[in-house]
Image 1 (cartoon, rainbow, N blue to C red):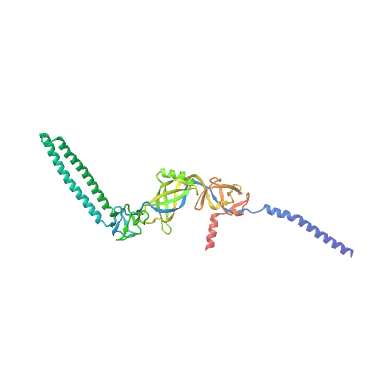
Image 2 (cartoon, rainbow, N blue to C red):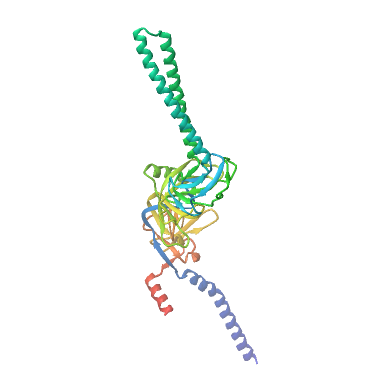
Length: 383
């Protein structure tokens, strides 16, 4: 009995020492596992240095260079309409004819009065010539000759007034034929034959003519680009590209105007570009997106936008050092374009983490994944 009890005590003591050993050695094994944490697989891209054109984008508003409201200059009846709505006209084309019968009669009266006074002046000039001849022979007095001369001079003045009256009647008659002041497309015609028209600024115009080719596109840009815009204008005008929604290709124009003041409400500057529009793809009143390049970032460092970690008020990237550790660097975004971004804070040739950065902490060990192998695996999985 005593031997059995002794053997039982030995077994219990052995079991206790084993538990104590496991308890003491377990933390050491866990600590060793933490020190042997495997490197995190990431994909990287090399920062490149290049000149980056700054492409500015805005929404443009298409407007006509010439938008003429056709109004009458005299009160009269419309005799004939020579155009149709939507028709393209050239400068000088006849648009409307007004009732010109009264004006033609007035012109004829003025011309008849002119002819009458011309005949009277001719008679007075003959009398003046005879008076001077008789005065030289002593048959009449100087006073009589002076009287005839005064009558002739008065007749010449009357003749000049008659000529002016004829010209005024001809101008009034010209108002009865309304012509296009500029080339363009005819809008809605608001009058018809028999309509009484009057020269009133409050009345609707007879028709509006809008120039379609060339056409202007007005847009606004941030005021920080004012210096670059003015420099581009002095250099002859920067190229402006307008993209048509749903249409292939784009139209190219040239910067022609920069406003003389910045809009203090929203900090923008208004600019205008002229576009050739032979095919009439741009239409007044239309909104189109436009892009232009007015400056260039020289020797900028470019990285993928996917590498940038955006915080509340900071931007940063992970850079892989020569010791294969990830270091967090704060960067300043200068300009983004497509999938790339020009930044300040990293140097050309630095390897920045693109994929896998969400698993990193400053000082984390990294393993750069083989992009070619990953590509082959992806293609195999697709098959």
